[in-house]
Image (cartoon, rainbow over all chains, first blue to last red; front, side, top):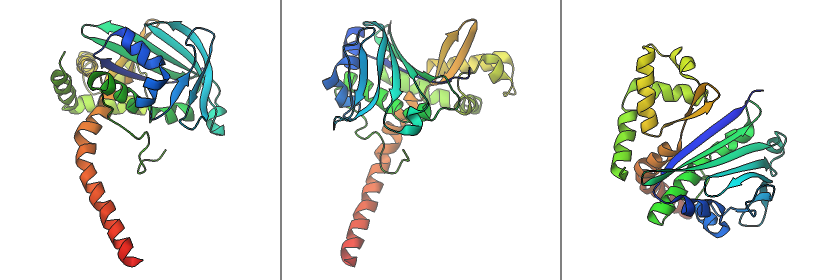
Length: 154
Length: 110
């Protein structure tokens, strides 16, 4: 079956433990994810959701695999826009590998269809989220404060 | 690896038309094998491999193993960092000037 996949890689000067915590701590997440945060216990089989600052659930699913601080796999389905929801489940894998003085973070997001509007839609957000996360862990400040500036089509 | 060296690798990787073409090819269709990429490049297989190595060292290309195949993906994260560091920074004063102009003109009008 055709598959749409996007891969995002960043080398972040931190430890796997700190990066894992940054990926799973709701309060920390809000700082680099434009006010959004994930709610989950981050153990295999537990529910997962991505929640906006106003409490609206944008996406939900479940944790398929959790191996802290190395690997996290999320079954991820969009809930807000009907045309994206209609595409069904996507799969988001986060892998953390120690690499000299940095940790290599690889985020792979895929859905079993091609083309995918959902994967298109998240592709605008992931690079900024990952850049923000790197910047926040390394310097204590984020690079981007808006996910989708007014002059960019969403 | 220092921050400085990351940026040097990045700009060096972008400073070659063949490597930029490879990025365009991956942007058009991600997750390609070396063979698929070679079909669109007018150079030897070895040349394409070397360019891909430079792109991977600069973190502009990520590879994923799937069975016996190695798939190449465009990694947009460093480009986003270039955008923030080298484009948005210089754009902002101009956007602010435009916004100020709009505000002034609209105030005169009303």
